[in-house]
Image 1 (cartoon, helix red, strand yellow):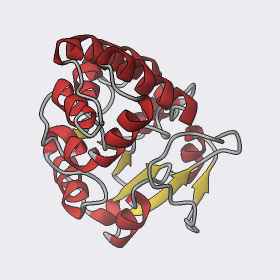
Image 2: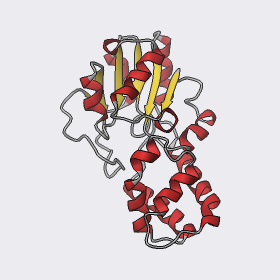
Image 3: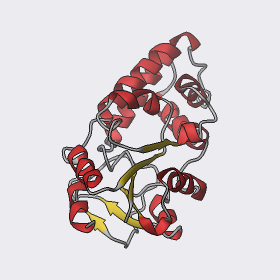
Image 4: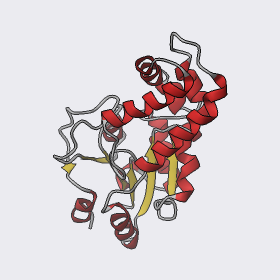
Amino acid sequence: MKAVLFDLFGTLVDNPTNEQVFSLHASIAEVLGVPPEEYAKGWKLTFHDRASGLHGSIAKSIAAAAKQCSAIYKEEALEQAVIIRHEFTKTWLTPRSDAVSTIAELKGRGLKIGLLSNCTAEVPEIWPKIAFAPIIDQPLFSCNEGLRKPMPEFYERALTRLGVQPAECLYVADGDNGELKQSKALGISTVMIRNSGQLNDYRTDPEDDWTGPKIECLSDLLTLIP
């Protein structure tokens, strides 16, 4: 094993709960003047384009979701909506208690560390200011790369940047949008991270049928990798 490739949300940081996600949508919908349930649905409907970077900025991603609503959104409120989105995301990007120490130990063993995240534009904007930035060798954000999981090209690009073959890499993720199955299909060793306390967390298309290896916490990796 020469590299470990991590998912971000639900892996290095906790997923928000379903209630927290709806609270975010409701806050944005209120300033835009649109129904919160419709905005939440619009955000989900525009996932592919947003995560693939087709909207560009976070403001345009918010506008695309708002356009799915029955009411006309207030364009002059977009700047405030972006601020709200940023503040929520900053909170969600808090590292899990054992995340930084586990990565540091893996790097100390000579492993390269990568990140493969389906995300919107505010995540790479915030990234340089958080604890992971200095210790992850190759972070790949879907909105910047124009690719998203489970597209095989996204994984292959990460492997290329890490300079490793599939059999030399371990992928660790909570299981969403077919990411685990695709990783395994590409010949990458794949582990799901889910602990018994993760209930009602937000995943768009959970892989709860995963039967492969599982761990409870990130530090468990230290016993899996020599």
